[in-house]
Image (cartoon, rainbow, N blue to C red; front, side, top):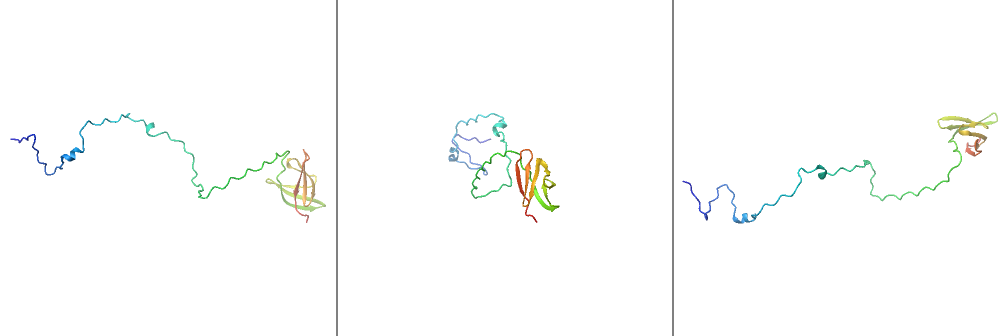
Length: 154
């Protein structure tokens, strides 16, 4: 026959069962279950992860300094607009005096030119006079003159 318990009687706890008292149970108040938060399921990926912003390239070897930045350079003074043709970029390589006439050896780009009085140079320039330490060139189209230092006469 099975034993029945009466309403006021308590059964002894099992040997391995945790003991819980009435005070422990009072921490949990009995009441209605809380409602679940409203949620759209499944959640759209765009709401979880906003679209990525385009990244600017980063200089991996940038100079970093704790010093204050140097002041900005002053703006360069504006030069008046040059009128007329640009003089040729000539480099004097040497000179020679032979048969009562001077020859000046010039580098123009990757070419070597020999200048004598009265000779024409590329870009419309003519050699007017060679009298060391200077050589005078004239632009044929405009008459503009240019003087180049060729060194002392030796």
